[in-house]
Length: 445
Image 1: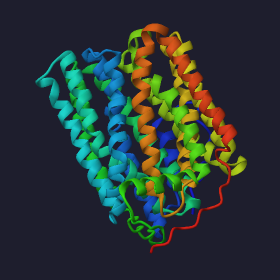
Image 2 (image 1 turned 60 degrees about the vertical axis):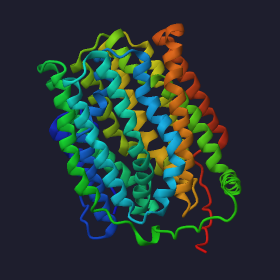
Image 3 (image 1 turned 30 degrees about the vertical axis):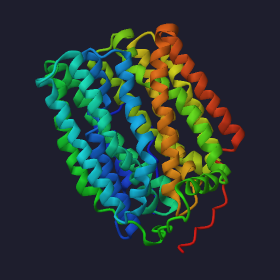
Image 4 (image 1 turned 180 degrees about the vertical axis):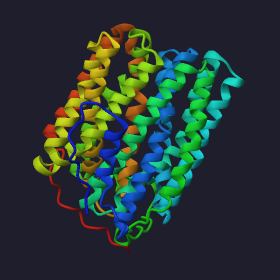
């Protein structure tokens, strides 16, 4: 049983039209099998994530309004990435040894969400730039938990349904998340406009924490497929250096993985340089109000929501490679389009375009990356992938902040697009998204 995306894009986004899309995604999802049940609870969890996502969407705007400069705003992205870089490989061993991956994911996310409570209380004790810097540090500290979350989340999604249903499950989850995200952003924008600063942001973070608690129960209902639980590999013999060399050689032999991740990280370097700066562009260049910022987020999410089904259909009709390259090319152009905007209204069009192509990138990068990993060794390959992505994420934002005084905002955004296009070229030359013969499952003894 699979999800089908049929309703046309409505002319006007209304609660009824959003519900129609969500209902179409989930109709017929009678949890008669383990996979049906898992897909349902994964979608329900997506709703809770979407409803609590407004706090994360407005975090960078909050620290800008508290007085943070471009360097500290860039640290919101680069510090967590640096922590991921340091901890991903060591923590991957913990994740690999855990049999209860679902519980590990649920508990680390729940504990991490408590950071929203601390952020909501912080302005009572610190003010202006001091509060902004403290929030950046607290956000970075949460990355210890999100390192485990990211590894375990991918494993849960990969093992909860078969490969054939994976794209449909993720499309359903992200659709449910998108509906909830639109609702939360629309409400958050109005609340932020009507309540005095900083109490408005404090309330937003605290309510987001309370909503996030609901997801803990939903995700704990997911049961992994027994055939997906490959036996753990025994520890390799030899010294630590020999084990490291053996692991590196094993990964380098998987050429499809190496080519895909090389292109992805150059692509991500270009985007990570400039995406944290876009909130500064909204506030300082476009002079956008909190209401406009919420419209940008709502437009982006609505476009993403309606085009998940489009990219799933394109994947089936044209193949993963075509859909991946088209969406990756489109998203690489987003910073350039932002640099050309002169008004909040034009920014709405750029946000809509970003949502369209982001939907494809979100589904197809997830699919293509997992397809390059041999079954039974996903944790090891995920750890390598996350480590390299974290290195790129740690380097990119400070580089963007350093370029800003020399190139200006619009020049820096255009530079990010140019670097991302190099990554797209590597995807083209490296065969990203092509069918890969499955690697044999490693022996259990």
